Image (tube, rainbow, N blue to C red; front, side, top):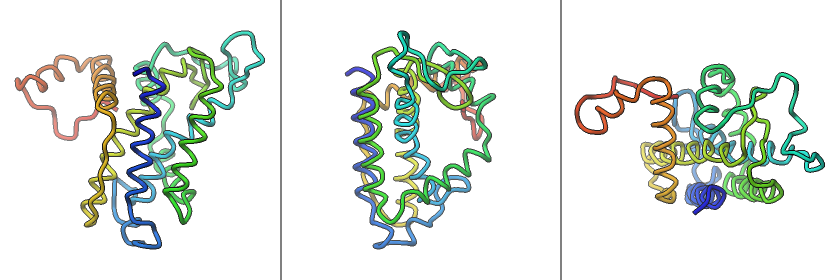
Length: 225
């Protein structure tokens, strides 16, 4: 399965997950229950949905009238990145402010409105429609004036969908609601591989290898992001 098809299948798993949750009208307490850090469940779902919203936003901005894969949002300060590892490393280190991320999640949660399942489904449709008009290998400009091939950006969005989809099921379960989340196995593998690549890039390859082979523990709270 190619990257675009795998992204579409992973997005569908997220849509199915949110559809399985009781609506805010059915269970308002669930949507305001603690979920991840400062986020309640609504904010967590909203943040995860941004993995779809940003794809639609950045892909739509691509200028198809250019002869090369350039973006209307490209500026003289844009930084060209080679791949998803480079993006996650760069964005985590320089382009992402934790407080801004938290605030965007809260805002995105509010934007889900009274029918989060419908909002998420519409975001998926918008993302796939925008991608359909983007040539393979085209570079898109994303957060922080970073630019990378669209398929590499999709790899990072699958990490968001897979990881936060699991966060949503845990948060819902802690609040007494059991919901299924079944992302494609290749997406889970791809997310794990990409995060391991990021960890190795930051110099933690030996640490990760030791943990994965039972030769040593990871430090408490360890994260590659």
